[in-house]
Length: 275
Ligand code: ZN
Image 1 (spheres, helix red, strand yellow):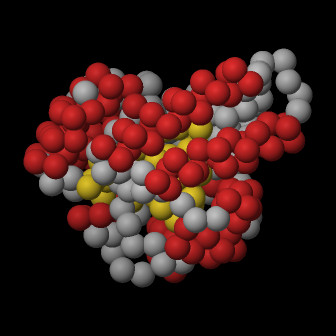
Image 2: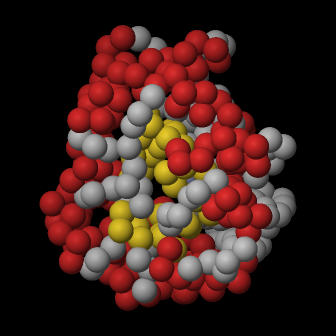
């Protein structure tokens, strides 16, 4: 397998979200020689869409994704309508910054519900409702299956196979994000990455620490945990993926407490040596 290509490293700005504004992250990536970036909605709103788009362009960065939309299952029709409107705004923002895809996190169970099948059906309906708008805006939707520990409160789509079933049902304009943190444990991962093929729109990297001390905010730097990141990179490349590898680390007690420029340097070193 070919070594990782430095020009294909991207920074998901969540990795330095406690240290840097979006403007600082854009400038920090440019300074470090990182060529891709994925902003989050709160930081984009803070910076302003126009200004962010201008800064990203002037620094020559690729926008490898935009986080995030989705969260479809809702308590009632009014709430569903609100979410569809908000998801359409996310599509507009993704288009304005030239994002390669809009990351979709499915959403969990509505409050009080025990109906996970119903929630999953709502995800399909929600995607079907959003998709025509996204197609018109030429924004690809990337369904990101999350680890099953988030099924109740964040995402009831938990395997790549399930995400691909949704893609099959929906047709053009929708694909998947392969995040090693969420999928590394899946015994059918190789089979399903091969099945995904050209529908892989994003590849997210970090590591699974043992022990993990926080379900959300204790992700590891590549090389510090148990994920065979290089092996999974081989699978996505064998499936035809030629895009960026995007570092996405939520780390309340470690990486969010370090100077951001240092975090970027370590991301670059670990990407080259451990991925
Ligand atoms: Zn991810």
